[in-house]
Length: 162
Ligand code: FES
Ligand code: FES
Image 1: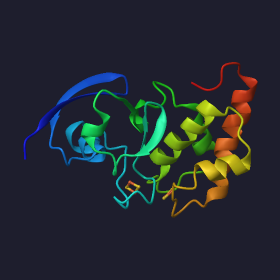
Image 2: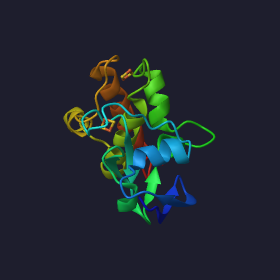
Image 3: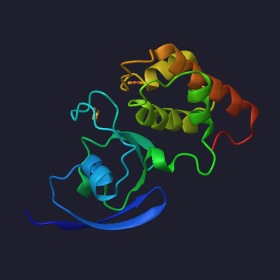
Image 4: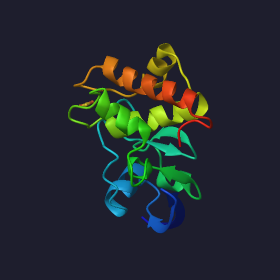
């Protein structure tokens, strides 16, 4: 199968790559770019472990063809926060919302998209937003608490959470 050229901006860095038409974004991120923070769970769009931000919106990288996102901006967990942890990451640690951590990158990306749109979501809105992200260990209360505490912080800070 022929490989085709694509250009991706991942975590604000430019990548010019050649990909087969059937290659999914998840494999390109993990195998070609070695950004292994994005996890593969089901590979079927059902667990949310592979959630990344595509132009700011959460998508399943396991169901997204790399060719489809030519020219797009992708954010993976490696691009969240910087030298310091992002407030969402701090909140997940503080509230005990991480056990094995497998679901955490996807959860945090989903939560970031929510907070970028709605700086102070209700618990119900948080539950709806993360309904497609499965966690096998922590249980959802601590995760919802962590996201909620961040929303409350962002209300106090003008301009929300970056
Ligand atoms: S690995 Fe993509 S949704 Fe499960
Ligand atoms: S912390 Fe283990 S799956 Fe969520």
